[in-house]
View 1 (tube, rainbow, N blue to C red):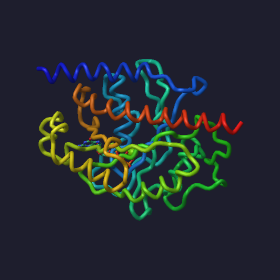
View 2 (spheres, helix red, strand yellow):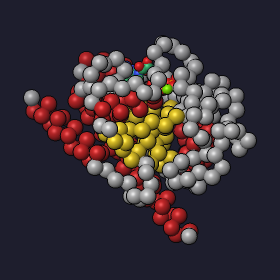
View 3 (tube, helix red, strand yellow):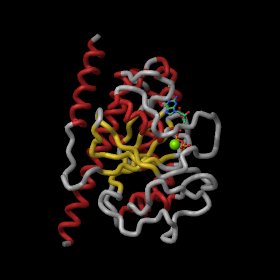
Length: 274
Ligand SMILES: Nc1nc2c(ncn2[C@@H]2O[C@H](COP(=O)(O)OP(=O)(O)OP(=O)(O)O)[C@@H](O)[C@H]2O)c(=O)[nH]1
Ligand SMILES: [Mg+2]
């Protein structure tokens, strides 16, 4: 009873914080958040889940892979999703990408992630697993604006799988000198990683297995465990649920704050150079 009351209050608080959130620069309509991760990790499901929370119903704008055991990525386009608070778009967009794969035969190239962060990839560009985007491609943008660039890189890692986190390390170290952005992780599918969580999503807060998974993610990537969030995506539910909403909102609030911090740094950098 107390837990339910506490979760309801936390959900209301998180929702209000996000609905009232304004970007540090009012001239910028939205801050872009880039969602990357292995094939089938739950990138598209996470985007749908964030929208579902604010719409208070299950939404499926980003197409999700429903076939099991496939080694090929389902999402092939660079595509942006607006997060709506009821009717109104919020000042953040989530951009979906093709899945990463360890040998790069079927997945996105790390160079494409770098170009997406820089804002050089146009909307609906079809990723080519055979080669990364070049300035000769039609989908290449030569003069990206502040809005085209991404400010937070969200790595989605399935909690029940081993991850190719080295790709993340190579992508971020490549990028760090020239671009301001923040990195955060979501570990999806906690239900598949821990039977207690499968039974009741609230066990995510006390599960030893989930704690170990979050620490493992932090140790493998060098990112503080405070930037790693367990998230259960809406994947088979017919209605939204407060417990799941709270997990999604906690992660999303952190992502949004990081994106705003990075945008502020970028704007300061721009002002100082003018
Ligand atoms: N059990 C469980 N399944 C999930 C969760 N999130 C996503 N899924 C399922 O995982 C599968 C892959 O999800 P997608 O969202 O298509 O994954 P993706 O990362 O976008 O995949 P690609 O676009 O192919 O790279 C789907 O069958 C989802 O329903 C979760 O939190 N728990
Ligand atoms: Mg996808």
